[in-house]
Structures are given as structure tokens and as C-alpha cells.
Amino acid sequence: MGTLVPHCENILVNGTPKQAKQAVRCLNTNMKESARNQTFSQVLDVLRVNLDPTNPNYRTAIIALGHIALLMPDEFKVEMKGIISQKVFINPFLPGALKHTDE
Image 1: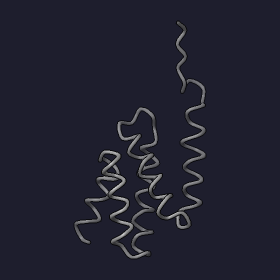
Image 2: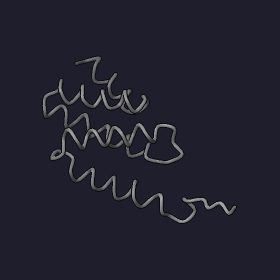
Image 3: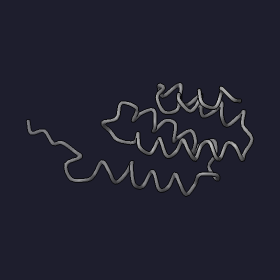
């Protein structure tokens, strides 16, 4: 587990969406609950930063968050609700976030 956890954490932040999905599944399957909760709490903080539409890892962050919510719905219910309500639903609708093109 010593090298697996940092490698999977790196994939969750910088990998492709498919890699992030598999990294979530790998950590969820191979870690004990207490260590898993601590690891994913740290990962959630980093993924929250990546939830910016201009970030190149935006799609990876959304996929990773979705699979964390799917595999561990009770452990991170409050954190997910906060992230989704603040970063996914509200930010795209702030003034200037949407660019209108007149054709």
C-alpha cells in the first residue's frame, strides 16, 4: 500500500477520466475504511480545486467525484453536497461565466 496510495492519488488528480475511475475503485477495494476515509478526504480537497471549467483536469475531477459518490455514498455525503452545490451548479451561472455569441 505504500506506493499504491500515492500513485492512485496522483492519477485521481492528473490522470485521464478512465484512469481516475479505476484509481477510485482500486483505493476503495484495497484500503481499510479508516485509511480510505482519510485518503479520500485529502483527495476531495484537491479535486475541489480542479473543478474549474478552465482547468485541464476538470472532466477528470468530475468523473472521480462521481465514482467516489457512487462507491462511498454515506461516507462523503456532506462533502459531496457542498462541492456539487458550490462548484458544479453555482459557478457556471455566475455573471461572466457563460459567454454568449451573437450570430
